[in-house]
Image (cartoon, rainbow, N blue to C red; front, side, top):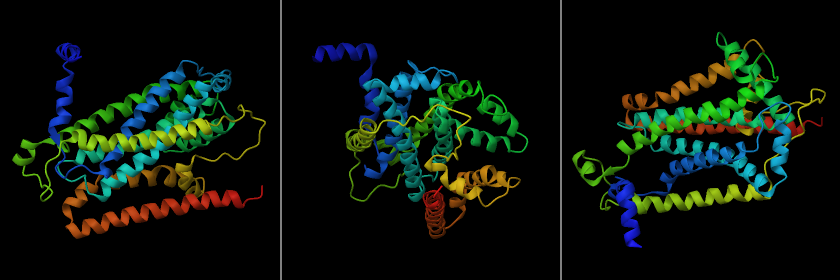
Length: 356
């Protein structure tokens, strides 16, 4: 057996690849909180693999999309595969949000890790857009009604609105080209953008967060007192695998037990009041308090301002005292969670309280 592995190593050099993990250390030691990034990456891989497998039977046409998805659901493996893809997308958004929250709370964006924060923060809206473009691909009534509203919101954007709406819908409204455009965005463009930015993100982590013992000493890295420098593998890797296994187990349970929903085929005669997914409910509720002319302030300007503010957090932290930085980050976390939670609750509560 050893000879076989030696032969394989002489051709592939796989031992040099794993040498990185076996020699690099975490300056502050392994931690369960550091597993969030690995979980995000694992869920991204699951989305890519299950998405590619679903492409084998999916037909992105307004006439055949719903029927092809219905055909997939008729087989046990197809139903399970689509369920994993569906629930993993929701898990990805939740875990990604928790990962960014952990980075913000622990101030892991400080020099020289600013680009890790910037690339990670930019990935969150991209992952959400990736998910949004996939929701209507089933050809179900709810999904297409949702994308119709989202397309109208994009179209109301000053200057770039019509172009963005055409890119999303293939025209001014949902039509024959809509699923073709959405399929291109979901299967082609968004994975390319997300995975490219993920590569840059991982490169920065490799450079600045996981170091050799010599680099830690040479750079005067602040080390945990009386704590030995433990290598990333197996001490952190084991934690990553365990937490990933739990999350994947939850996804598999929901996929096997419930499967992904499939609404009735799109029908213009159906009267409905579509609602966005849970992660957009806060924005949906906030829109109620603005008129049509001022709606872009909520749908475009507000998210843009919030994103810009979060992007410059490393700069603000550099200018502020340690105590002031803690206060600012506490306000951001508590204020953001409270606002999001309250608006989301109000949106769901309003629907449940409406007898119609």
